[in-house]
Length: 118
Image (cartoon, rainbow, N blue to C red; front, side, top):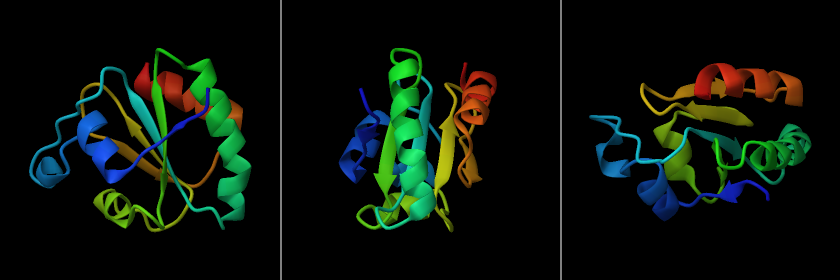
């Protein structure tokens, strides 16, 4: 299983209502989530992509892992103030999302997922 590509409509039904995010964060997911904001032309994103897919398999049923193409989903990128890619957004079951630019190694990502989401 690989990460799920997330569109604006998918975000609105799986993560949070886009129209209300600016005033109030209300997570709609059944499990914590990780969103990878990427672009197809981005070399660091290309290196991170297989790691994200591996994590999606390893955390299946525990953490929902998504990918958002910043070129086709600019509104979602703007929502999280994505200024550089890759950018990862950690969404715990309660509390606000944690936005973190830059890629990491698989080991570092596993430690962050375990610490922030589980």
